[in-house]
Image (cartoon, rainbow, N blue to C red):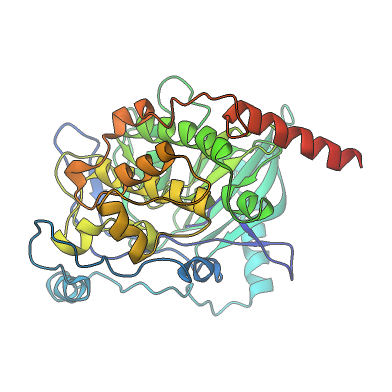
Length: 406
């Protein structure tokens, strides 16, 4: 799926996007919930080397810890079994789909479709903001009032999933349906707004809000030296936790919360959750597939072959917090100490370390409860110090203003 989040490409000033990874397959229906109509999973594009930068410090296998578990889950064998039984599953690689059309011609084709699309008669489409294996994101302006928007063009794969969303007579492409559900009800500033869409036979077009100024959190962290101070991280986490809670309350399991899928306004530090392309409908029963970014996969996927939405969301939020304050994924040694609740890191408060340990507990039933995360001591900390959120944000904004003035 194409994403709003992006990484600068030095050669072309365009962007390459990090993928979500599908590791298995699950049936995703639940009583009294919006229903899947077509459940065949969809792959995502290459990350352009972005993931490799973090792998130097990330974990690959969960260390051998003594906690109750079932037999080890063999993801490779599960994939083979499904392939034999259903005959529909395509093994996904980290390489974006190849095209017989040359890049320049392919871009002209996309631009031609956008120029002739009915929906785009209401928008002026400009430069490309981001690109992925299955689509691209362009800057746009709404003609009637000059509103800045992002126009996302996605190629439809033969197995693109559709869902039935209450209030809409026709089934909708997964990403469109999930965004509509996440936006249904009172507006939540921390969730990107879907303004318009068009669903055609071989592609779909989505028009979303485009806050200015903004960049994805990964790029923002790179500008700050690879990590954030604790005060800024606290301010970000409050917003992301709220967005994750609202999504779950509205029946949406995002499944790919990470810095690349967070837009941040550098002036106000307001954050928006984007890209629902790897998401799913919430359900009480377990999922048997992990669809998201590999580094955020919780240990129960490997050890039990299943996972639940809310504990997995807490795990991904814990990895997000770790990356923001430490600058990389937790290593096996980190995870071992986290399991023992003895993990610390120089420069971090004990409350911050405690929250990371509480989010990344290997047993999902012992992790923080998603609905109660905002009550953790670290998020309630208001100290008059350099790590105070307001102090840190004001200081950052002042420094930025001075740099611009200079």
